[in-house]
Image (tube, rainbow, N blue to C red):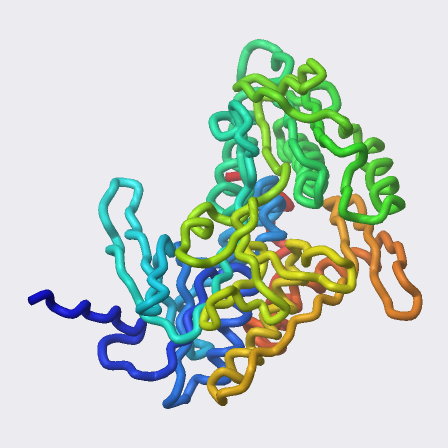
Length: 449
């Protein structure tokens, strides 16, 4: 006679019969939600909160372009999941979700191996009563030849760190080699003129100038380096107002950054990019920032609808077709009825969705229906490194207002401080701001290792 299947344990261990709220993905929204839920349910005898992620640390994704350029040290701003969990009252479990058993309400986690192939954390499965999927997005290579082999991506902190090492090594090599740098050796081609590509270009331009100040003076960026942004659409920043895009383009071109619009990449090689029109862009260093998609495994989860970008389709409550499973952030296709479209994949959307799901989780414990999510677009800001910040702010009365300069930069940094405030509280965030201010005056302006 077949033995009945043993149910998966709670992330808190065998025998824990509390309502298990499991948040998968420690990005901006997932970490904020887990922290707020942990605070609310820290001493609860009825519910427990678990955060699952494949890494041990969190770094706010909009900062990754600064890490890639070396203008931000990822070590200093990374958040430890274990430490934050202890602070807020949730449990952290390391693992990457790769499967789902809806009938038994279990998630499956793939094993975690180190660089030597040793299995650090085995494959496991945990039960849930409320599952919230917040696994973010990854770069969409569109299946184009050579992208995976020859381009860098900025999906995770490790990828940003890797590009910074390559960028620094190329300059060190050019400084010490006998011959003059050949065409394309120090060039950077960025495919995609959304916020990530634009901000990265400005940061790299600033970093190259700093290399000269720090002694790599055999290289003249104006002569030996060219940064090119390649965009298939007819203008940069296609998701932002035209006046912001026009202003941003002028400032980038004033910095000597080449912008090619209306041209799509067709082939990527180690030495450069060929466009569909036959144009060739020589560049040893290439970054692919042309669109995103949700992780592939989401399209394989039983019974859950996904779109062509692998995003889980959710309704106005962020609920999937399974009443016990919700999705948020970049991995969810959520309706935006006021605009007759879907909520854009932005950090502010994930922040707002975390607030809604906090109410929903509490409602479920009381037997109440989930809360509805309504997205409020507060505008977009583009940070052009130390040169400028531009963008638009949305208001109920004044509509869209274009801002730039000091005011825009303060608004841009405040988005990150709001994220920190959710994680650390007001006092600790204030201390962090003061620490950053002091450190900025004592540390090099560029990470040189």
